[in-house]
Length: 330
Image 1 (tube, one colour):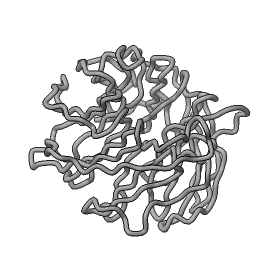
Image 2: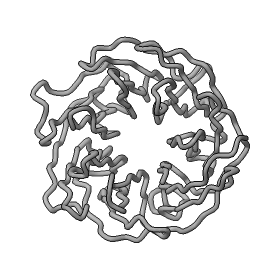
Image 3: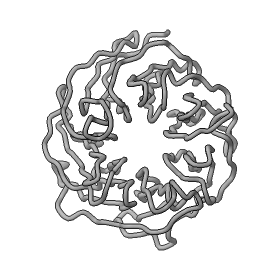
Image 4: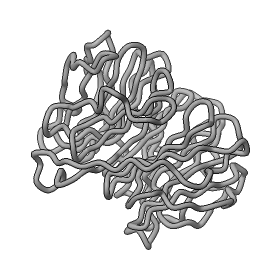
């Protein structure tokens, strides 16, 4: 494998009290050859997703439990817990900070509530978050019995978008965090939108329930829909991300346990490779310096894939990590 610059990762995952085996947050050092080594651990209950402040040395993690929480850490060699707040809902599974560092948004999967905290100048969440509950259901009786907020993404103009797997919606909030006057985007019934991304003039959505990747224009008109995996059988796509240049889109497939790479040509997605995720149940991944780090939740490993001209290739390199669910590059 071609050597890449050394770097660090922060891993989130499920702990024994949240149905997993992980220690909490783990900071990992990666050398030029791709070997990974633990630097420090920060014990905390169920930090299933973690993100960073755009300017300040702070990390934010959701604590995925029934009485949901959001934890703030100092982004140091050994992450240090600074504060913990209620997430405003149950079982939060995603957190995002806007590019200006003004708002922190939390997707509470359990009850579908979106919570938005204003951040003080020091990056700490202010009391009294804005809470936006939801209602509704979809055609999938077991998974869409009610709202399930899954990911928060700040898009063009500072508009907050939140996918709701249970109601087949993308909820929208203006830059002042008031609900969008046009209401939510309603996707095809049974899509089960999970993770999604914006690049250029298009939106891309991974459908966890219908096993697809969909493409939309800026106004959320659907332009195309393709299978996330070419492998026969059940598939629950998890994370979706585009390369920095927008030429490739990657999606992790739970079931086939693969990562699919698509070549992006406007609104068209052309599959160019589908490779092993290096383990079972790839829940999340991060792209960094020609590498793709995959959190294989049920195999308890982070697997490293090399990106050659944008196409992933297995390397055989892994790092043992209990029930990993998120990889954040630092």
